[in-house]
Image (tube, rainbow, N blue to C red):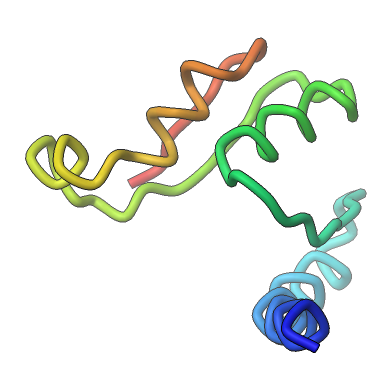
Length: 87
């Protein structure tokens, strides 16, 4: 039941982005994945033969990242392809 709720929530969050991508004419695909987020992102990029990963940051700053850890920083360390961070 919890996984179903998580999936439904993820689909709701993803829906507006899929709609915008659909009308843009840009080729895209989407997946809803679960697990250790940085590892899942890096593995997905490798599995799909991506040239790079582009991801946003929450702008927590150096102290926030130090205390809480940064998903983006972990992806950078795990990824075999370049990672571009957008603030």
